[in-house]
Image 1 (spheres, rainbow, N blue to C red):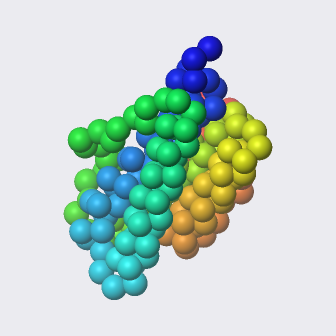
Image 2 (cartoon, helix red, strand yellow):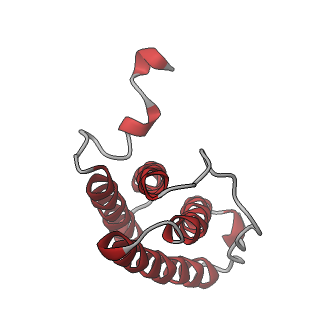
Length: 148
């Protein structure tokens, strides 16, 4: 199996794709936010960019080419107000938590530690945007088993 086709690389590429989408989404959301919410969005955007770069480096270290960001991403709803932007930021972080949760299952050792940290960071960010928490972050976004 080539390095580019390893399960670790595949899991990291999935998370990298999630980070690319979140970075794009924060660019859209940030345009509608002001004050402390805009500062929070900026800090999170910066953090996601750092994590994106870290993931790209890890993928390259494993002998694969990091997947580039798309030119644009579909958003779940139009973002026309600060409340829409807050809702988008919540959804972005919730979806990213789900991707990180998948990575926790797939990775081992230091890479799993990275995935756990990513899951926690996304879950905390989502909770702050939502002003509430959810049980089992990263899993709640998939719905209850009877809903699938």
